Length: 272
Image 1 (spheres, helix red, strand yellow):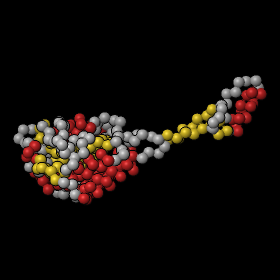
Image 2: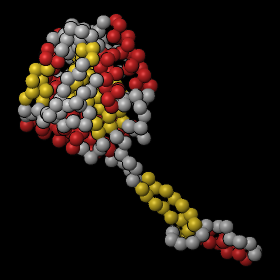
Image 3: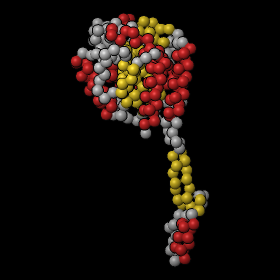
Image 4: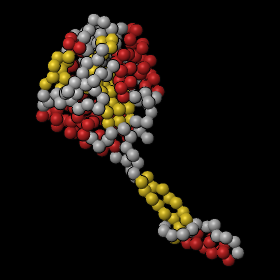
């Protein structure tokens, strides 16, 4: 579903139910604010800190230097020689330390753009820009992607792209193909594939039609079963999140980005 990105790192998808279009949802772009730039640097530093791994110590023994001589081993070797046996004792010990590679981070964001979510579009698009820039400039190998879903699924930020501008979008739709949005992010980022720290973020009030809701729950269960964390950012008012997710309130843009970053750093620390 992620076609070629536009020069500013954004683009529209072409999947979903008929009746919607990119021009109905995408409302242009704007320049990032100083606060958004500051938040991107802050989130990037948090990702770097989470990606630091303790060095692993490995202890080995040997019959010859280098290493630290253990008297017990040396006496055992002397006794073996005195008995006419070939010494098998290894009196020298050596400890080596090696750095553990930082696991890559895969972060996907799916934002509901049905009409009930209209007032929350702004903080989500801002958070998407913040996270894309934080990932691009962090030392941790991180990839993010953001989609908006309503009647169709729309790409907001592409995997590996660094958008120069913040994409603005509206929330005009009356249907939510949330299951297709999750499939799009999984396909683009490999959220269900082990070997990386993985986090899915859903921004929605959860007021879905029964069919996509059931299909989305199946996707959520599969992602969680594979080790992918699922964070649900909930707006004010009635909210019905899917089962098994971690629910946090959706507030302003920088707070939203920090909440996602905290969940991402937790996923990084838990990854092996």
